[in-house]
Image (cartoon, rainbow, N blue to C red; front, side, top):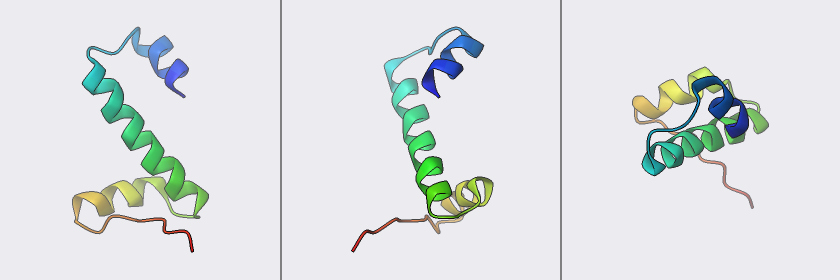
Length: 56
């Protein structure tokens, strides 16, 4: 996914931007793997209801 992002935009502007992008993509990927809607999962973060995948 990061390769696609760099091909589309050319590059990231900072290392912090790369970290932020990867954190969001990791969160979305985890939500999808647990059957959650990616868009709704992101909205929930902004509402203070983040999805936490806790393995037992």
